[in-house]
Length: 168
Length: 331
Image (cartoon, rainbow over all chains, first blue to last red; front, side, top):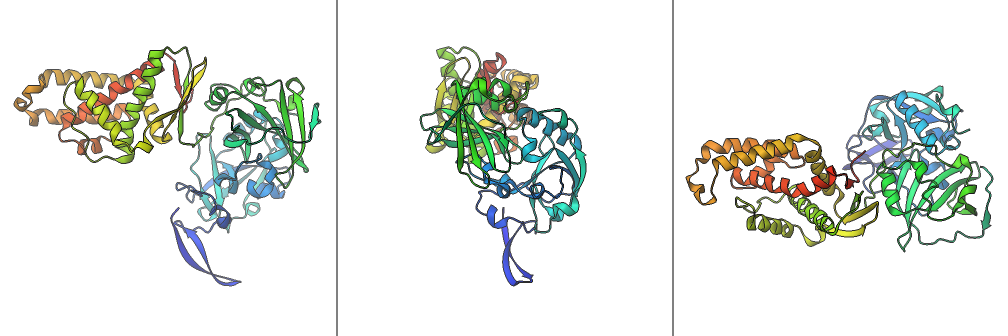
């Protein structure tokens, strides 16, 4: 992504940081600078309703943490972190999220141990970061801006329908 | 995590595995493909976790099986663990917060806990291409030597043209004289030579089996365009109808190559431009405006499209006979 240098005032004084074409300062900019083509060129600010898999305790820190920071053991040995490792996964509709969760649970029946089995809903605004284009399955990834606070925007819907009946 | 029935190992006995791609991803990889320096393929299947560790199940699986899994042609339960090439799998527990193995088991396939097996009928839906400068075509039925010669040849011709047109954006395409035979062969050669040697299509690996595959060294975007053009011609009657109409128009209006100077070009050029636009749209991938700008006359543009259509045709036949599947098409 083409980038510009901006001067920013903060409580720590004047410092320079890199801001993308869209004027969004990303939360993990320093880390994703190490990843090729990250964020992807087609990622852009969006405003949309969003749904995310969460653990039953909405305050669980993994609910709002990119996988790169949750636990390195999430990645199989000798694999590299990539661009998606620094994003949060969302779905544009509840139906798409439920469908994906149940399909994934059928593929890996212990999945709820890793990503929870509840669903949270919120609204992502353009200031919240850069979204990848929505896939045909309703999934997109968010490169969070420094301003984005998952816990202030998202609220619990409840257990994912169907999740309780499978894989137990 | 569940208890494992098996023999505990002091070290993971396989070294040198290289990550190829993630086949399933949901907030991190759930299924990843690896390759051993000797060529064997392995799957790392995320299986379980708790506060102390993440557990991966590792098994050796044939490459053509993984290709079919990734292409949505095989359900996951046909692969895990039914397609395991050994009578055993490995379980690796990776210490939470690290990438360090803590415990490793060798477990018989029949002792894998059912909770670690996929349910029936689950297909991968969005596996990423390997992104390693290769493009794979799956071979579905018995292939004879002639067909095995024709497939890479026609793929290369179509690929070279699209690479020149889409990637290199060659400003002037070689003049293509009117009828087949030597002139078309000349164009075949010219198109191929237009491509820098490092960008030319190569064959990386061929496995002729039932099922098998052929893997090209290729720019996967251009190769994907070739596949899409074949699918467009194979599955839509419009391209064939336009090709026949163009051919008929040429026979009636441009009967002889040695009488070209006597033809009333201002009258028929607009029709040739229409046919160029229509045939390019029906085949796909080709930009008719750029094509017309890169030749001297609309007749050359339409002839090049007819040449391209004929180069696709052997692959269209294989696709219709269900002898091949492109890895960028979904069933």
